[in-house]
View 1: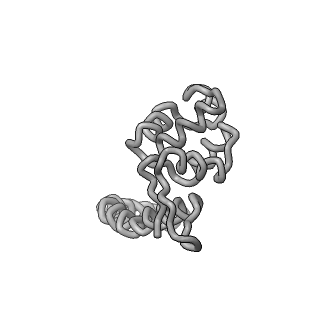
View 2: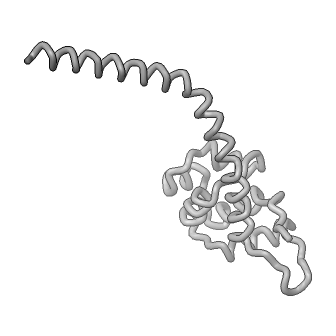
Length: 139
């Protein structure tokens, strides 16, 4: 059972406002961009786990506070006892799903770089040949 993250932006905004911080202040404290923070708070993007940790640290909140804010925003329905999933587990699952795409992305990058790799190999061969010729001239 997965936690609903539909209201994550509302929860993040509530935590920031509870800390009496502006998006600019959070940006300065966390190193995140104000645009990122705005997109998260407006529900246009979901932060990665490392970015979420930086945000929470900047607003002085922890995962329990985020869970409470999600509850307040109506994001987490109460599952039957014993099936509750934590925010950390939900983000871990999100990160795993994101990483599952990595092999596909790596393959696309390999395909795009193949012509460059072939040209680079040809250039290496030319340089090696030039080195061999120069070594032969030095004899």
